[in-house]
Image (cartoon, rainbow over all chains, first blue to last red; front, top):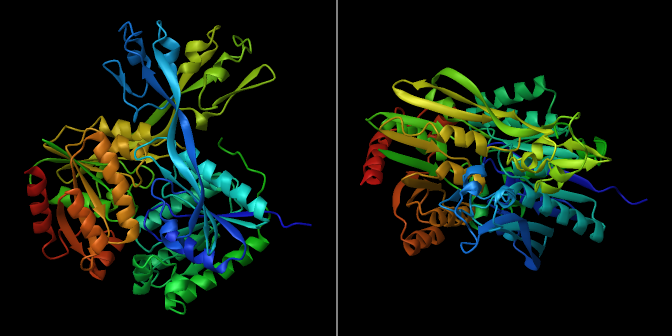
Length: 303
Length: 276
């Protein structure tokens, strides 16, 4: 019997807590896996994992409206009905247009055309640490949630083809659209936080999000020694909510150096304090995943 | 009157630190809008007194079963798959709805009722003399743009408006930055910071908003970033040193203008340069 495909997502709430650094490290420890970088607004994982682009596919995020000035009767109905203020002086602002097509519906003279718009590219890369699927979104485009969902779908297909047993997802910060696309249907969410008041505040929001979608979660406290009192608060809160802490990483200058050198921490600084803690963390995550029942059925609570 | 946005592309580069301390250093009347509605943190540092909290909703369809004839025109018109026809019944999936109202326009029997559905809230109050407002997206909701739009509608009531933006480079950031006179991009001297700064630069370029750069956690020149700044011609208005003391103050939710020597002067000077 083949192993079921497991999916683990790395999230944070607050940005800059170390999601990508950790995901890149995990990629070095894991065996056969596919990695999906779902932070499509700011995809940084390939800056560490490098590798060669094997394929690139344009991503059609949706439709964009265009008003043909020759056919336009200047009645202004489109402008009146657009709820996204995307039409001004009978011209479409392509950044504000969400492609709903209401202008097309209300136009009495058939002057509005809707066409598919490319809003980014999806890449499949072969790296020394496994296949990475990521995307470049065109700057300022909407539909980052749809693109994140597509990146995950491509990563799953790759994993099936390769017979890999794990998809590791590097998620975006926050709790909105692309985060929801990254977390739904995963088996386990790993939430990276830091011992700051802000980090604690945003952590509790993502834990709530995981609960909302019925996804089990575990916590990593990065730079835990930066503010011991704040770390204790987070530990207490985790104990209260019965959430496992799978890792505590020390503040380590080598982590920043590894990023500047464009290498995953286990490659740049094996045996450093943060690297040893990261390896333990990964072992804890794998042990936890073994005890977690497959969440293959997406729980559509809230949808 | 100036609207100044503080944005970054990459998360955790120090947007809130710059926005909060800049707002505190400006002598004139200031309004602060925390538009990072998925992780609003400015209140931790500004400790405002909140006087009102009001819900923010988006229009979302409900089907009046008595009137619906099950034709499915609404489901065909919806570009976001928020309406699905299942065996002559229409099902609504609220989280996918963008609130465009197209379904109501095409329904031949008037069976679609648009109702406000809560996605979050906006809080308003004061931090000392400073007018303060922040938004919060409800956990489990996908759309942060309507909340940011609501916050932005408050802008302009004071001499100056400081807007703390969400991370990223997609629609929430565009909404937050829209209409600003200047955008301060906070970055850090790493490949991640630079990569995301470049994308943010393109967003602002596309929108025609003048940009400036602030380098945080500066630990001596990082060549690729310096080269980008030179090549792009975008001015670097401030460098904040890499200092564990700053990280510790931040971790406790304390502001730098009152606790880190010279920071208030740096912020005053930053404001003068932005204004110039």
